[in-house]
Image (cartoon, protein in one colour):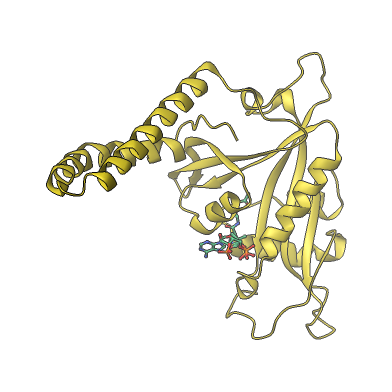
Length: 257
Ligand code: ACO
């Protein structure tokens, strides 16, 4: 199932997942994820019970394999009010019908990676979420060490909004998760006063930096002064910068996306 990158350019088609995919779907989940899924999960996927899914297949493969899954994404709808991101979504409290898309699993067979298949599957999910007028966002969890997936979601303009400490327990070990959100249909929550303050501070910092940059360009006769300042700033800013990155990726990123 896994293996070397396919030698040919695949002819990828996307289709819903159905009962005939059960075996391959189970195998792919076992191969690609460190978490075990219950048989009930797979039956719900293939029989479309509360779970919506898209599969990718390579139509250029020999006939016996041209309909075999090489990628998949599974999602379910959850009521916005009951979700863990209620505070991050613009919700009308008078309406109980507002929903979110939760991305359960996404995977692509190793030989077919970096062809844009996962991106295409996520685009399907976003398109679907947008067609549901009550849907406010799509969201998901990703384990903190899964760099390819983190890059993928960032590239797809998902916002990393939280770090959840010890969210996953795998073989007795705790692992953190990142929570990513993609807002649709005006679902972004309004900026909090804290977000506005952070935005203002960042704006002032950027302005000061650009003024300092201009001073450097105009005051070329005294480069040593700037160098000294740069070194001094370097000592103080670098740790706080990396700390900020940690916070940004981490606990709560107060982002206006
Ligand atoms: N390293 C760094 N970035 C990567 C990598 C990688 N190995 N693979 C993908 N990306 C990022 C890049 O930004 C890439 O854009 P680029 O090619 O322009 O640089 C972007 O993702 C899009 O790549 P795709 O080709 O669309 O992704 P692919 O089809 O290869 O699938 C996936 C990516 C799903 C993460 C795949 O590696 C996989 O199946 N991994 C194992 C299962 C997994 O981790 N699933 C996600 C878990 S989270 C969840 O299920 C909710």
